[in-house]
Image 1 (spheres, rainbow, N blue to C red):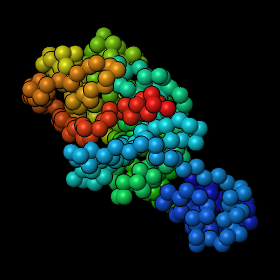
Image 2 (image 1 turned 60 degrees about the vertical axis):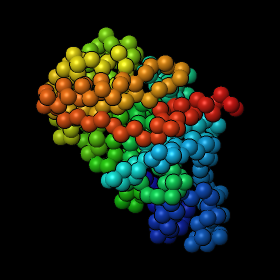
Image 3 (image 1 turned 180 degrees about the vertical axis):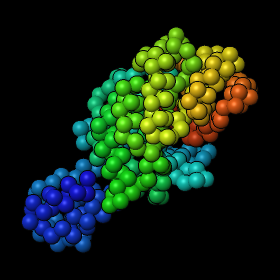
Image 4 (image 1 turned 90 degrees about the vertical axis):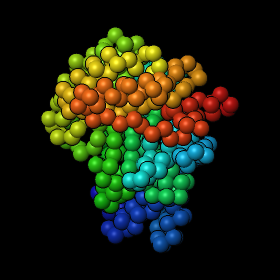
Length: 333
């Protein structure tokens, strides 16, 4: 936090205003202390002696010819890598960041979980995803989505610190209302997050309206009743509406009966439903629902009084699904 930086600068016997100068450089995505050209050379040498800067290395970049979506594979200091996506919308630019290297949740349609969890990302590494993706894309980001590789609530303490840092007035200053956290539904994590009372948007990756199917496609399922109780607690504590993310998988979770069951869950807590045409993952073999099926599913929800949207498919001509680019890179190194 900036307050901690001020204390560290004070401990070195330096004037307090230097911490603001250093913080400004850090929020620009500075790669080396030598770049801090408004600081005396002697001070830069002191910083070099006492601190370390870690900047990610761009290993791969993909740019969609259809809509300009940009996907980056960032190399971390320990040789691991994560994906970040830059997307343009009418309301501003969004960046989708990863919170872990790999994932332990085991969702059957997802590439991120193939190979399991390697490690958690630090708050600084998550901030770097935002800063260096902005830098590489050549444009500012106004919205952040924690929906990349990993389960944010499985790395909750680091994610909470990231949220406080990225929204700090002396940091990148992105408002918490412009941040969405997506989770597969870890009840204890949802309840812990609720106690923070942060005005972020919580997106629950539901993907099935009943336990037998949800457990089959999402092995981390702790029981829909338990997840819904945690979601109600979150709504009560924060006053924020939850969004249900629902990947449309052909002949698996896309019947009108399942739509009716999903409508009941959504109405019970006033949730918005976001239908997501599945991104095909070669290793998984699951197919997206047809456009006709998605429209019929959507109609059932709307007729039941549920607010529903169908996610615009960005980057469909690149490795759009989380984890795909990382998997391809790993196979060729």
